[in-house]
Amino acid sequence: MNTLEEGSKIDQKIPKDDEAEDSLELKRSEVNEEDEGEPIWGKLSGGVNKEGIAFYNNVINDLLSKGIQPFITIFHWDLPQALEDEYGGFLSPHIVNDFRDFAELCFKEFGDRVKHWITMNEPWSYSYGGYDAGLLAPGRCSAFMAFCPKGNSGTEPYIVTHNLLLSHAAAVKLYKEKYQAYQKGQIGITLVTYWMIPYSNSKADKDAAQRALDFMYGWFIEPLSFGEYPKSMRRLVGKRLPRFTKEQAMLVKGSFDFLGLNYYIANYVLNVPTSNSVNLSYTTDSLSNQTAFRNGVAIGRPTGVPAFFMYPKGLKDLLVYTKEKYNDPVIYITENGMGDNNNVTTEDGIKDPQRVYFYNQHLLSLKNAIAAGVKVKGYFTWAFLDNFEWLSGYTQRFGIVYVDFKDGLKRYPKHSALWFKKFLLK
Image 1 (cartoon, rainbow, N blue to C red):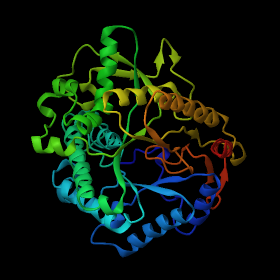
Image 2 (cartoon, one colour):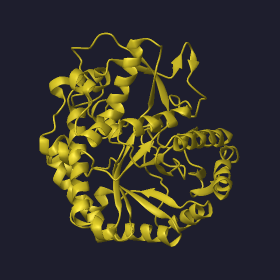
Image 3 (cartoon, helix red, strand yellow):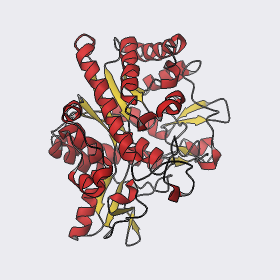
Image 4 (cartoon, rainbow, N blue to C red):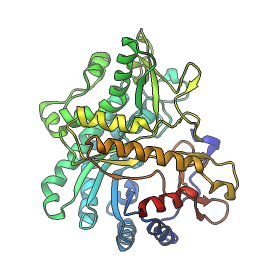
């Protein structure tokens, strides 16, 4: 099953070997001091792959040689097929020890130079996309979704999230007990959420907006902060929602030195007055519907992604909400950006005034959050280079550097990259 737009395939990519040096030099020239990356689990599994180790050592060393500090994500949805075949991947608690062992390999091999570890990126996207909607690997969902051959949208997303959280916590425990003292690094997790705005001033819509936030953001940040899932989820999902043992709750609670947050959009939220007792799914459990339009008016300026509209204020609102409700954590904005359609010439593609506007407004919102006392320590654009997007393939361009996929992957700084360079030099 290919769920990518226009049937895109990963047969072209930005290389991290032969042409990586050019990309890193371009990044350095734009005054970037930090960079995100992730080891591919499959490249380092099946026994220790020495070539894989050497590959990532070269990437890390090249970054450091140019004054760029790497932030390394251990898991970005690339589960080895062998573990999926053996026991169902994150549907099984067996994954916890295997994930911990993979994380330890990374700590052991790279931790002398890597000082910021992110256990996993957007676990919500993995649980929802792979086990409720069936759009991401492994493409599981309930039969009533029509296109999934296997799965249960009413139970599997919750099981997978539970095992993701336990895997994260096991890796953090290992790092803190065995490596942190002498490697002197920090470890966290990156979450994603939309900011949720009540469609109306009614109590029903206000409650629905909070439930929507609980089901997307609270699903992860509440266990990480307090050791249990949100009350609204426990009430609405009932026995389908796994429970933490006392030992597990203590393991998960507080299991991060910093929180990574990915922010793109906000949505209006409407209350859904009745529950679906026949076709149960994570999507319908929150008794809420999300929309980018109210009375026919979009929530913000459009982008090249049809469902994504700009709402810069949501970044500050989310950050202040996190500070006030979840113990005032140290935060890095690990992704923030917008996409353009890949339907223009190279000459026109490097002209991106909408992206300049996007970043200008979001950085102003970020400044306001910092002024309000939020402990934001860093900010990453998404993305440095145009790249292969999980669902959009090559049909969307998120980079501040244009990549010509039809002409040897030549790269051209967009106007937004030049704007960023001036901004960072001020």
